[in-house]
Image 1 (cartoon, rainbow, N blue to C red):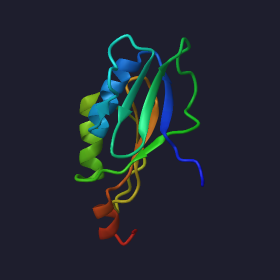
Image 2: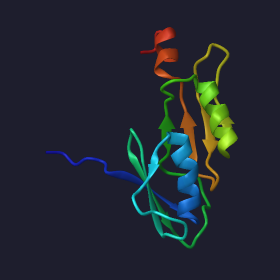
Image 3: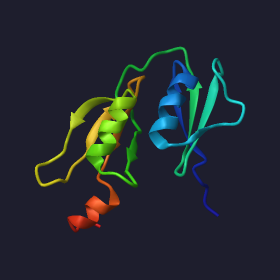
Image 4: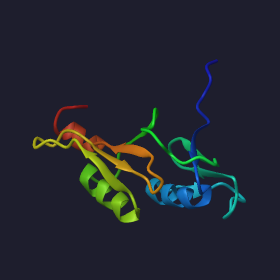
Length: 128
């Protein structure tokens, strides 16, 4: 049997604070017993879990791996606006006039992630 991805691990300066952003972003929950000051904090969600680990060094280059988020019950643009209200910032806007494309955001510690079109938006344009 093949291995399964248990969680994606993300190095950061403040695991609890960054996990707070991702709990809201993914509408997930914190791992049982996780609290401020912990060196490891888990976010559990309907998709993969995210494990935030405290490291001494700051982020210095572009991520080699990033998350692609697909909204379930709102449009890509609505989701991007919601995430920016939570503290994400725009890094690159690849949205096209025909409705295709994505937007690349950064979480509060600068980790890149993308917001793609929802399944409904993809179906509407024949992309799925």
